[in-house]
Length: 253
Image 1 (tube, rainbow, N blue to C red):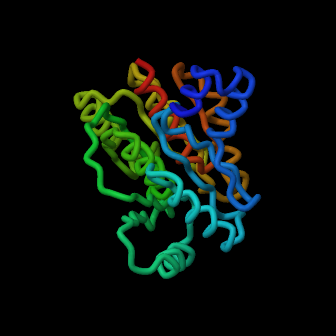
Image 2 (image 1 turned 45 degrees about the horizontal axis):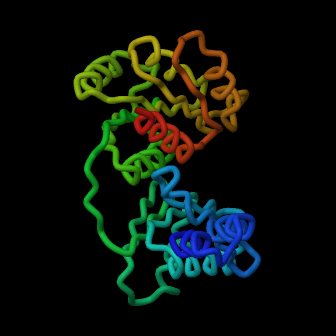
């Protein structure tokens, strides 16, 4: 960018040519299979992420290698199976990269160097049941990557609601800025939490359920219909989106 602006000031480029070059500089195109937003981290404070399940493995590998060749920021790969993670490790072989894989969340963070980040805020992450933990862990990885401290408490849903209140009280005392609440089945927990706290609540419906609740649609509809104020709802099983939204909230001051 500096080089383009210097050429503009010197008269080597006119303003239209400089605009075109600046736009091109913000996009990395990899073998006509992917276009990366090269300035996302500068603009949002959060690095690029790849949604892996729908991608051919060879295309995924090209994207990862090309990104790391052209960028020093961390790279996140979401919904990455253990089998694919092990294959990526084998294909990269011995190198100086840091591979941080959360098996439960099926999310991989690749770093060129270990970074110590100053904690900017605390985020509370709660699940209704044990079966929701994988989605909560995805959100946890994201908020920690964004520089927040995650305070977690799992399996404290409405089926045994007495478990909830001490954990909420602890998180409030810790000064959490936002709650991420993951729930399947009837999806009631985010409404309960939002009725107890004075900070934003992000509801994450999960696909845990059976009968009419199978696939998470009942939980999604219940969260969207909540009468408790202060709830935002992301898509089913979207722990990643919940984590990014939590970071947007804490970075908005």
